[in-house]
Amino acid sequence: RKEVEQDPGPFNVPEGATVAFNCTYSNSASQSFFWYRQDCRKEPKLLMSVYSSGNEDGRFTAQLNRASQYISLLIRDSKLSDSATYLCVVGDSGGYQKVTFGTGTKLQVIP
Amino acid sequence: ETGVTQSPTHLIKTRGQQVTLRCSSQSGHNTVSWYQQALGQGPQFIFQYYREEENGRGNFPPRFSGLQFPNYSSELNVNALELDDSALYLCASSLGLQGGTEAFFGQGTRLTVV
Image (cartoon, rainbow over all chains, first blue to last red; front, side, top):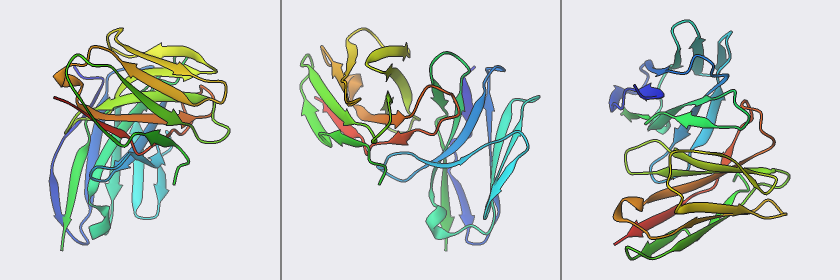
């Protein structure tokens, strides 16, 4: 089983749609969780951290379910500019800052 | 702009050669991590340097090595290049070792081994 698993997509959705991505992780001791966004041929950039209580940033909502070991990202009212690959990232609690990336989910928002 | 810069941006090498990639971390950041991202895959953790010492390593062979300098900039060296080493190499800088610290990525070095 991969440490961090995501559906690679692609997800093709019309503008204005709501889309949800899920991510599962295998290490129950993981302590930190993030969603990164990566545009084509660019570096990953932090979209948002994910907290146990869930958090929202504008049209983006992230949720963490520790019992089931999954993280979700919800995007409401999709924009063309949301087209990108979304990477689920999980951080260990070890003595160094090891983070493990999922393979990413590709989103294409269609006019 | 993240303040993390990598050089060169693109590189073509022949199988068997050696390569050195460079990374300047964001001002004030003392931790640099290196990742390999193959086409269509997520970044894979190579190793991390904290205050000039290797502080964690992923599943990469010893021919992948690195350095961190007193100014916290870093190098990734790969010996005996193989075709499968062709990838985007990313460095990320952060402050400290706490797992919740945000990492800022450079734009990457795209290495092609022929």
